[in-house]
Length: 114
Length: 110
Picture 1 (tube, helix red, strand yellow):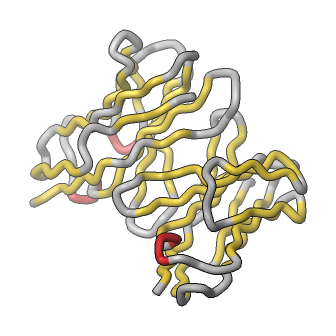
Picture 2 (cartoon, each protein chain N blue to C red):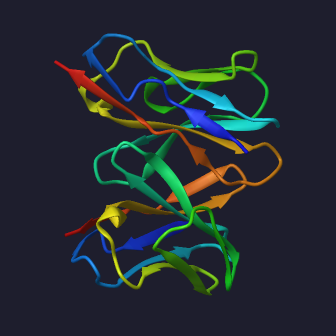
């Protein structure tokens, strides 16, 4: 079974500062990795995903993430955040080539302050 | 195009009352459907999933149940709500590495 740990429950940053949201996973098999964003009282929107190939994945809204197999990590980064990036971010994992069930982390609340 | 509908958006129910949340999908057939719950500080927890009509798998023992009466309909129910059932419920349709989510239902049990 897979599990996901998001190390920070809350991350406050100032506008235009860089940000990194951390995600580590555990699995005995190969995995696919995802980052989703959730705005208040809404469903989830996919930011980016890693399936295979290049370990640096670029997503929407200027976000990117890097898959590090040796450290079992998939950290999300943005070089310069905006007020509109304030939201909750979820890291998720599924079994590569197997069950498509998504296992989520507990989420990180990103607050961008002016 | 694929669309997933979930209702109601918000719900306030007294303890001990029944619950029925509905999720329907358009634009596909035989979808794999999932119910997740987001409780404060606990992230998104998978509750149930279904790969077809009448087929339900439960991930965690609890006060809730799920049913799949039609191919594109997935229902989450409870006979008697508990305070601990409060949370944000999300229906999802997952197809390989693509996932589509409903807008969610905010349930408050009082």
